Image (cartoon, rainbow, N blue to C red; front, side, top):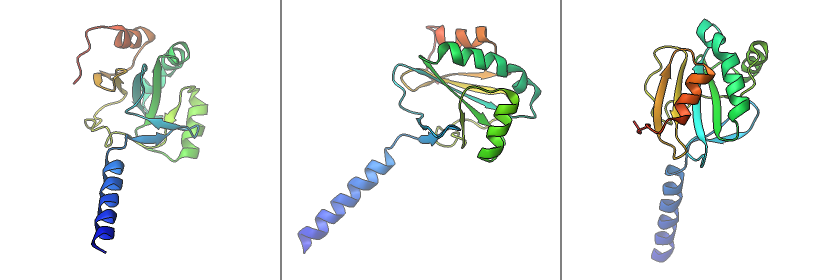
Length: 156
């Protein structure tokens, strides 16, 4: 009996350890699973925006082109600051012409991000999964290119 209890405790411990060490996985607006910590060989950019934010709306065209030209080496996900329901999120994305995927839940807590104090704001992760830059305000293709093409990135 003691052996069975010991084995059960060992199995429970292993299960809890495995669950605790899992990378944050989310679902995007297309239903795809997204692993925010494991994206080997690709940059990850998380862009916080809101439909009511004029600067956010102004930069959508830049994000669309950047996404379409860099999708092989950069993962881009938009996050609606107000966390609106998925059906409304899809309608807003269509209305605003957003072509890059959107996350359906806010990853800030999972990634230990600082509180969002202004919009738009974008978090840049290198291919090793390290946060290397935070971009405040509207972005252009040139500023986004610079963010992923500089060799001066030091993890925060």
